[in-house]
Amino acid sequence: MNFAFDFDMIIRLLLATLLGGLIGLEREVHGRPAGFRTHLLVSLGACLFTIASIDFYRLYGNFSGTGPVGVDPARVAAQVVTGIGFLGAGAILKERASIRGLTTAACLWVAAAVGLACGSGMYQAAIVVTVLAVASLLLLKKVENRLRRDAYVSVKVWSADLEGQMVGIEKLITDCRMQVMNVSIEKDVLNEVICLEFHVRHSTHELACNLVDNIVALGGVSKVRLE
Image 1 (tube, helix red, strand yellow):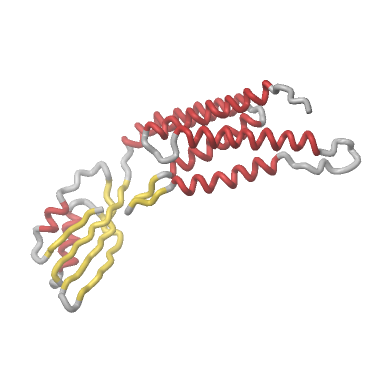
Image 2 (cartoon, one colour):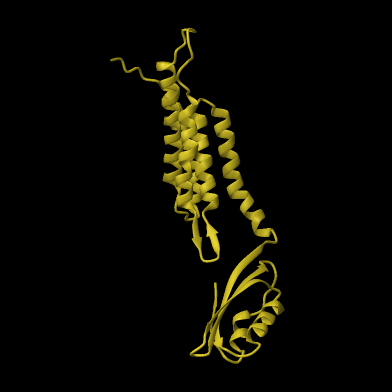
C-alpha cells in the first residue's frame, strides 16, 4: 500500500492546531475549565473529521454519471456541529444566582468551526475568524466592564415572625436602589420563625448601601445571607 506524504493535509492539521490553540489560550489565561488544550484538540479533531469526510467522498463517490454520487461529504461536518454541543454544555456552570461558561462554550463552537474550515482548505476564513474571535475576547471585555449592566442577587433573611417584618426588609432593599423581583416565604409555626428570600436586581454601577448591616439592625433578625 502506498502512503504518500500529503503536505496539504499536514498544513491543514497544523493550522487547525495553531488557530484552535490561540482561541483557547485566552480562556486558559482567565482560568476557565476548557482552556488551551481543549480548544486545540476540538479544532484539530474537527479538522480531521472534515479531511476524512472529503476523502470518503473522493474514494466512494460515484462520479461515473450513471447514478447519484452516493456519498455526502457534509454529513460528518454536520455531526461535528451537533456533537460539539455536548462539550459546550459541559463548560456551562451554574453558580448560585449566576451562570458561567457561556463564552467558553461559544469559543469551543468557534474552535470547531475553525477546524472545519481548515479541514476543507478555507485557510483565509479560518485565520480571519480566529483573529476576530481573539480580538473580541481581549478587547470587548474592557467594553463590557464599562457598560451599565443589571446584576441579580439573592437576599435570605431569618427572623422572628413579627408583623410587618417583610415590608420593613423590602423597604430597606428599595432604599438601597435595588428592585425586588420576587419573594419566597418559609414559616416555622412552632418556633415562630420565618425565612424570607428576596430575589433582587440592581445596577452594578450604582453605589448600594450596606444592605446586610441595615437588615441585621432590624429587631428580630437572627441571620442574613447575600448571594
